[in-house]
Length: 146
Length: 94
Image (cartoon, rainbow over all chains, first blue to last red; front, side, top):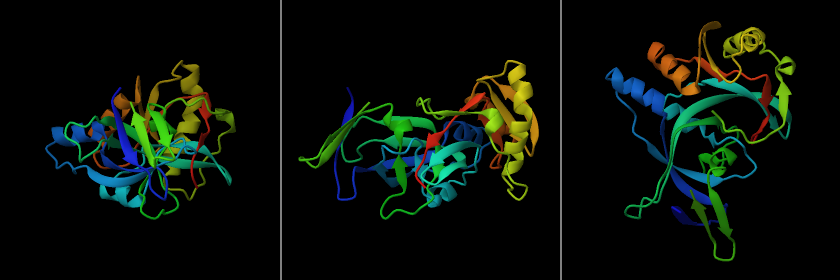
């Protein structure tokens, strides 16, 4: 099974991901000859208590993302409707030659409401549901298999 | 779409319309207004494309609806949402 192992950090299960425009928008821009923003790296934290992956506003602004629909959600403060954006996500290990890659050409995300230090992406159950996640606490590392 | 995570659901009749001062709420309100008719026409599970409060079309998948949205309205806001009688209540961080 393809898998990646990352070092755990003090702030949790952190890793670097690549964020970009979603597949449909990329294809549309390419067809009309418009420039396509390149994917950019961002630091992510695994968050098993979040169903929908959330991105910092900076990333959404960088790609000029606009909401594509909204959904009702449950939060600690009650039920609210939030905007959903469509992006692409790639998880890999940049430092390893031919490392396996988990690619989601279109991933529906929300905007991170509260800024987090050193973290611009909260990886939620929408991504984790595709993976086997093994956390090795004593070894200070974790593995994502997909 | 956001994957089905077996979360609790809310019936569409219990969803609240967006307030009048919510600029992004026009399309949500159009979605709610058209949902009963589209469900009655057997469109559950399909995706409706809405722009500025007007239904542009109903598509078999979100990818198809969004593809049409990006083609017609490049770099603009549109609304492409799966039609559901029971809407999942996702947990998010706030």
